Amino acid sequence: MPAPAKPEATEPSYNEQSCRVMIVGAGPGAPDLMTIRATRAVEQAEVLIWTDSLVSPQIAALAPAGCERIRTSSLTLEEVIAVVVDRARAGLRVVRLHDGDPCLYGAIQEQICRLADEGIGVEVVPGISAYQATAAALGRELTIPGLVQTIVLSRTGGRTGVPETESLAHLAALRASLCLYLSARHVEEVQTELLRHYPADTPVAIGYRVSWPDQWLTVVPLHEMAAASRQRELIRTTLYVISPALAPPEAARSKLYSASHQHLFRGGAL
Image 1 (cartoon, one colour):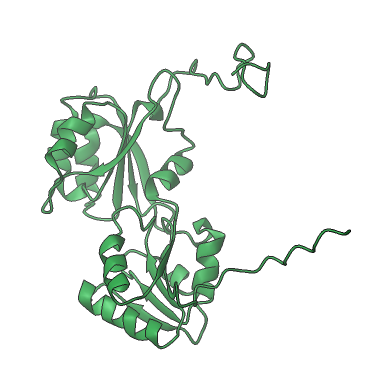
Image 2 (cartoon, one colour; image 1 turned 180 degrees about the vertical axis):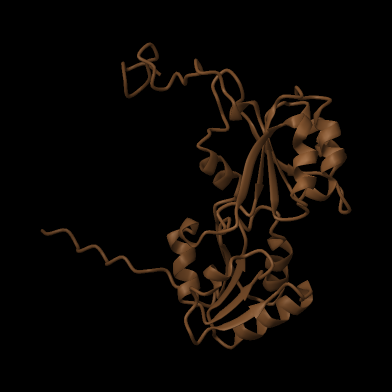
């Protein structure tokens, strides 16, 4: 007896009652660094609500000609939610477009909760974050065997603060690959604290609008971090990556591909 035919795969629709809104990560800036799913969502959007102060206009331009485009740089959360609810209830495909990965400093939890209160489901599409684009642009790995195996994504306290257990002093004490967002306005204090834990010559990558046409990316020793930032007058859309992995020893090598290291797929040992 022949086996029953498998149903044909279909593209998931985000206009169903259970999920009428997509929160989409636009990635760090370059349109070709968006995921395929994110690109398709923008290309099919009927309403695009986008963070125009942080997302490249090239990405917003991927939306179809008839798409309603709403900029959020001057709107409050309540105003954004009101628009999303109105358009979603009208049966329109709504894309809320965030820079980078929306799960990282994207303030999406409060949006999802408010939309849930309105009975509106949300699908979240991840995006490449600036720390990944920065490491790629430098051609560097941030986890080097025997040197550093941990990546910390955080920010300095600033006006909104951070939990005491996540203070910069605690994080810097790990001497891991430390990626600091939203910290350029406080770079002097950041450098001072980091110098208490990292050697002064620890490499620091400073990335401004990484992957945008006007990208500026450099690596300086930690003790020059603040001076380099102030010289460029950096106050926003800036990422710092502090890590010994940016200048690894030539002898550093992973065991995974070493002839002396056996595992399940090579040599039969775990």
